[in-house]
Length: 257
Image 1 (tube, rainbow, N blue to C red):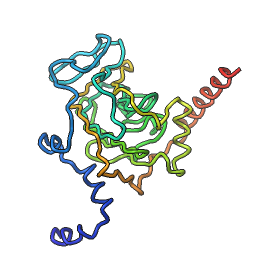
Image 2 (image 1 turned 120 degrees about the horizontal axis):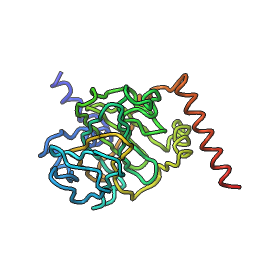
Image 3 (image 1 turned 45 degrees about the vertical axis):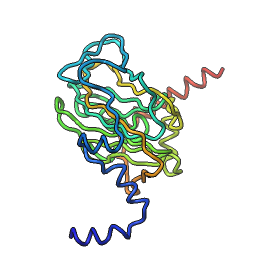
Image 4 (image 1 turned 180 degrees about the vertical axis):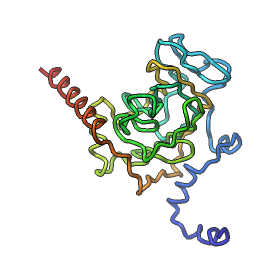
């Protein structure tokens, strides 16, 4: 099988080989260094980050311990085309997120079973919050560390969770217009660039560590998974979402008057 694969690889279109380079870099310090990853946290202090005083460092990880606000990386803006890697851990019932574009563009962090948000797949862990659900729940139990990736190039967005690509789509594809419009109602704009990376304080304890990113060079291409299918939202969860959307649209209409 290995010999057959080696013989077949040279026949593959270059685009697929390039895509493999984007998502196939091993999670080793040496491989990531060669790929251009830059470490954003150092496990000892908050150099490059700002917060209101409610975050602490605990065993080398950022810990949102009390109420106060988000932890924001201010040393640099998020690159236009990038790959972000990090680890996250939640407390029971936790809701948090990683914002990587200006406005409401968020990799959702959640205790899927203990938080009421978990009933809606578009609000579940690894979702693009209030936009696109992941294809499956790949979370580990509360209290255990999860690994995550966000990969963005042009209009393509991917979310990974514990080594699995659970979200992969091109926001410019008409197939996904309904979902992009849903996010816009909330105030999210997938065309936005140049924002700060932000770790959300949503009221519960949450931990982050091993944050690093790299710029994706033009020589590589991220190809969305053609088989990607988000988990559906049905029943009471869908009714609640629709009611929330009606409320948002009603508020916007009142603001115009």
